[in-house]
Amino acid sequence: MIPLGDGVRRRTLPVATAALLLVELAAFIALIRQPPAAQAAAVARYALVPASLAPLLRGDLAAAGESLRLLGSLFLHAGWLHLLGNLLFLWVFSRAVEASMGRARFSASSSSAAPSPGSCTR
Image (tube, rainbow, N blue to C red; front, side, top):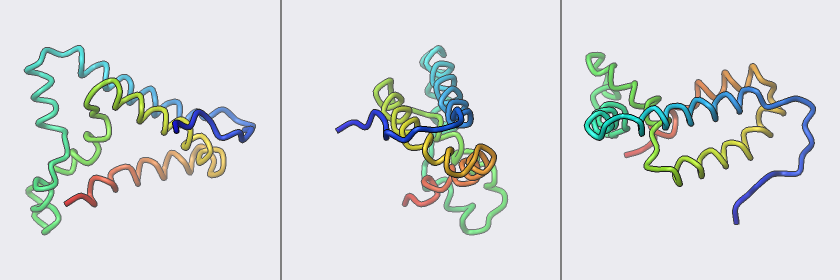
């Protein structure tokens, strides 16, 4: 079952959700327009590899650059189907969250919580 909506009427436009959708789409399009070697380099640089975060989690500040993987991995997708599935669920569920929290709190919450799923992997 694929959710297409939630039936809740909203008084405001989900601007923050739409902006996040557009950034994800733009990042994907920018990546697929690159030559294969550049795509592979971007994936190698920004994909989340949990082992690369181990030194940082142990307190080694020299590995702080690896924390970019937590954010970078949010914008990497394996293909169109992966991207469209993520965008659909983001659109359906984030609109309700943004409407209940307000645009500013939703944006702050989303940007601070975004790296969390990647940091929980083993």
